[in-house]
Image (cartoon, rainbow, N blue to C red; front, side, top):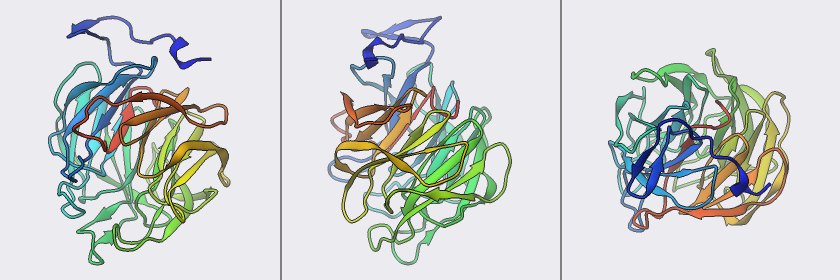
Length: 326
C-alpha cells in the first residue's frame, strides 16, 4: 500500500494556521533539537503528518537549545529530556520540557533528570517515559558512561525517578518497544569523541514496574549511533557505526527474546539518526532527509520528505503521537 493512501486519522476540531490545517495532534511526528553546520546547538521543533508524505512545518522551540537528547510521548504530549548544550561535547543538561501535540507552541518546563546526560536510549508507553544509559560529565576520560535507568510520568510534571540499571553501561544505542516492554540495542562503552567500543547488546525492561534490565539478545553487528523505532510487536534498529558507517537495519520481536534478524538496508550508510513510527510505518531521519519502512514486512528504506528548517540540518531526536508504545 502506498503511504499516501493511508487515511489521515486527524478528526474533530481543526484550525487553519497559515495554509495548514491543524487537527487534534494524532498521527503527528516531531523532530526536535540538534545542531547547525557550525555545531551550535538548536532549539527548533518541527512537525509533519505521518499519514501523508509532503511538507514539514515549524512547531515551536525547546526551553534549552541542545543536542543528543531523549524523547517520550503519549498520544497527547511529547517530553524531551537531557542532552548537551555546548558547541562541542561538554556541558550536559538535566532539563526536561514538554509540548502538547495539538497546537503549535514552545516547550515549557517539566522537571529535571536525576543526572544530566546526553546520548541516552529511550522509549515510552502511554503513561511512562524511560531514559536509559548515556554519558554524563564532559566528554573526556573523566566523564561517566551510565547504566542508570530512570522514568517520568508523562501526564504530570516532575523529576525523573530511579528505575534500575542496564545490563551494560553504554551510550548511543537505540531504544524502542511496545506498551509493556522497552528494548535497548547496541551502543558504545567508550568515551564520546575519544574512544569507542561498539556493542551488540540488547536488553529489556517491563515499563510498568521497576528493576534492572534483563538480557534479550544481540544485534546482527556491534555498532553505536543506532536509531530505533517500533510497532507494538517489532523493534527496528537503523544504521550506526561498526567498522564504518552502516546500512544495516535489524529487527526483533518485542514479546520474545533472541538475537536480531536482518530487515533490510538504508539507502546509504549512516549513523546518529532519529527514528519514530505510527505503528505501521517507521520513519528514519539522517540530517534533514526522512525515509520510511513498513514495520510488519522487511525491506529497504523509501524516501518520504525533507525537513523544512534549513538552519538546523542536524535535528537530534524524534517522537510521535502514535508510536509503538501507545
